[in-house]
Image (tube, rainbow, N blue to C red; front, side, top):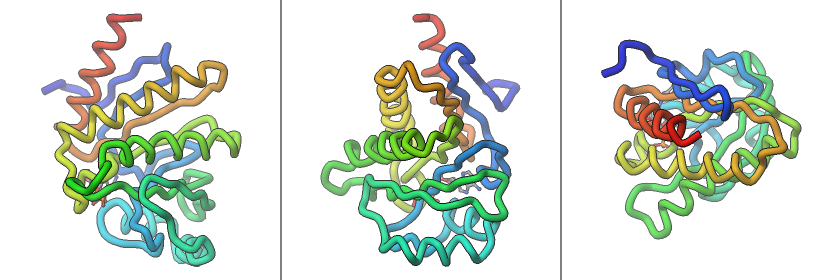
Length: 182
Ligand code: ADP
């Protein structure tokens, strides 16, 4: 295990941390929501509690969200200005990996259309949706990496906000590998 809880590749504007996403000071945090967008457990519940009741009021106006898609709200009492709500796939459902990657890609695209330049992701689908961390982390990393490569002209700081050692170690490992290839 590494003796620090942060790993970054500054040249690529990528970072992994172990942290509570509700406490982050970045422009936008991503919520691993459910299709109703009306709140739930895990990171979703934590974000709604920290943002306050206005968040669910705005979410009510959005008519839910399909798996793999993303919708934006304000951040209300959070330090983050915005929350992007995306719905991860349940592990084992058809096209789960593609849909998990779509969550990252669509969240990044939505952030870009709102001229957001810093975004933090939780490890989508690795809680109640049952995705093994060992499969979710490489999918997350490759989706983010691909998006970055396709948008080199657009400055975007991307943070993987892990809540467990295993995800952090996996992501830090991929980033370390990437550093050696620079
Ligand atoms: P899903 O339904 O997409 O599986 P969960 O909220 O159940 O979503 O879990 C997604 C991930 O978010 C899990 O790895 C969980 O440990 C993590 N998580 C839970 N609370 C927080 C938090 N406050 N900050 C960051 N990550 C969190």
